[in-house]
Length: 223
Length: 275
Image (tube, rainbow over all chains, first blue to last red; front, top):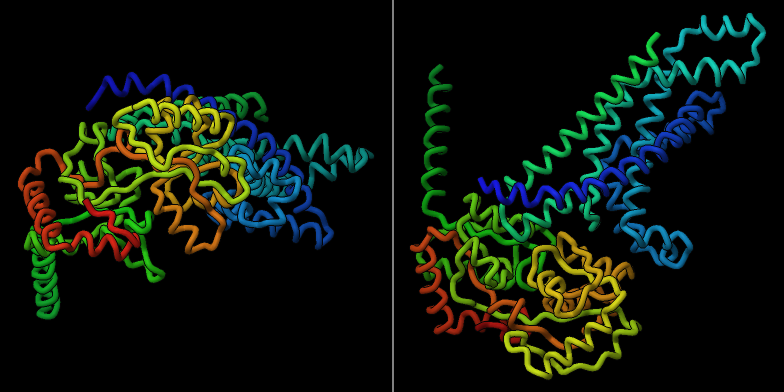
């Protein structure tokens, strides 16, 4: 065990953790919005709308995240008409390719989490609202959505943790995130165990923080 | 019952045989993604200069061999952790790597080169044909200066953990924006897509790609050797494996004397890259 290496690589890895957190937070914000949108589409009665939302979540939950990143990064980069379009401004950058892949992926899972939460809301609650003469729009925003969000907190916390670990795939498209920098240090020191232990420890600590934050929220919004 | 007994006995015997067969087999690690040094054919079989050379060297050593595939970025750790006994993966002999493992004498040498897509503004840079970084003479310094200003602001792509990355980060061509990839294939893809303005690798890696893909990849600037680019490509071996190191050195001597290395190199590179 080379403890000096563990200590000297720690600040570099901590610095790279910022990139990991940036990737995670941006894709979670975009993914949550996508998830809300697609979960609402899923409970829509129009078959075209809900089939489309179903297809989206089916595709992104049914293929590995790594394959999705490669399709977006290396796949789309091969197509001439994409390279000559305005989309290339974003797709040229590995950072945006990773954000797009992560957002679409977490969006698909979030839409499923929210959909099942919507479906577990007791019809009695909605009927109670109706019997009080509340507009269905207000019932949706003031009753259904808050309950759905509370119901889905534990599952969504899980999704955040999975996504945190998913961001390690950003290193496959040249981004220097926590895993990317760990691999870089290993490539010059040839000591994988020491460096991966430190990197793994940082991931574990982040998971610990996320886990407790979600627990706190669950307590705050319990009923 | 009898059948089960016979079956398990057979299983034990076959297990024992495979273990004992493996015991005196030399396992050689290669990447299989760096043509023409080592790559895979359409059926997934390992081919290339080093694969053929490995079989030849094993014949001279007089032991059975097995060629194992390993990702480039984990090559040296895998050797140290005994996943295989020798590396033949276009790995140049450098001082940095020699801190971790031993190398046999070099068996082949490659020059590195920058490459761009046809039409790049870098096509016009004028330098000498080749520079050797071991001795930084006035002419070498002048070329490095030309390169420094030509590469400023450009995205330069290369494979991770290579002599090429070391050179780009050495400061010899100033502070540049380096992007590193897991495999040379990925570097080629991003050079072709335009994400990379310019790439650095073994010159043959680019000419091989241009030939096979039909993409207009062109070499620019000087060819590089010496200094950060190491002293040829050798067999990487664990430091405590002195017997195996001796065996490989002897085998390389024999293969060189009999003209095997030149013959195999010419077959795969199109020129004699042996040393």
